[in-house]
Image 1 (cartoon, each protein chain N blue to C red):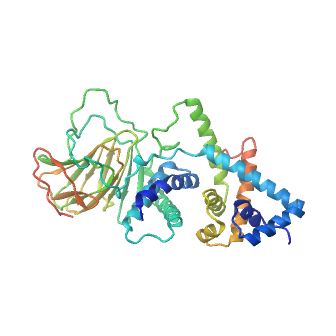
Image 2: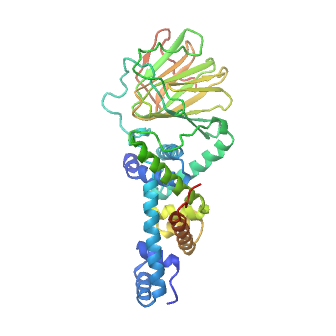
Image 3: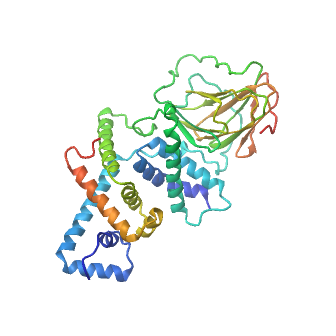
Length: 244
Length: 166
């Protein structure tokens, strides 16, 4: 045969040739010092590059860093936690996606770290909407959540009880509402007159999510299309279903 | 299709491939998340060839995200050096050395043409030349040439004393 191509040699090295082609390359290598040199160089380059890539690899996130809505709920999942708001609970990084195309806007809060956690608990920050407010709290257990909003709410606050490494992803169906991201929450303003569905993907490590809307605003909260067990805070009646 | 099994098997290789390809581990993690959510959404109509579907979809997510981010640069504040997490290296000297290596390898990868980089990184994940050719819309012979050229460029760049540094 004529000289082996680089592709032939790489395929031979990778065991990616059918037996006749592999035999032909092997026979040629036995009699062609030029191709043997090229094979040696390719193998050396591949080894060296693989080692560099391995040394430069970022550590892979643990499975808990991902929302896995296909998993069966863990025992006790869905039980409302007693305390949803803890001072300085932090979401270190929050990815937002807005707009009809669901394009992603990534936003890291790593450069704006949360306050120390050992101080006395700070009172929960007021929601942006006028009192009275209705709250819905739930334990997400790693899931895809949806929050349906009616047209009568003008502000929404979503609080997270999370560790500094957690990331939450939020999809909003509008690209022109006010979105403010804080270490422990995200506020949406200027949503009056709109209805739609917010979707959140939260990792299993997030301990709680609280949705705050003006009392009476129509809303629903669900995990992957299933209604969640939840608690309803003072001032708010049971959240309405529908309103999407 | 067992989604949890697919996730366990492929989330790490997919993250590694994306992080190497785009150089942004935060974006890579987001893309892995979005890819598996899309797979979940079509659980009643699963792709016939799962691995190529996962890698192609994830790379499309990365491209789409970057296009969007280009117009929203004011909202971007990326964590510069890896995904924060429990496995973060606490030793500052080792972390500095790792950051230096990352910058060097990133610089070398960025010097490759996109097809060279994709062919090389797909080979690293064990894809056959035929699969790489399908993903790139080219021939298997071209894949061999692309990979060989990428290996040669990377090896030369990384061998040199200042190779790969931006």
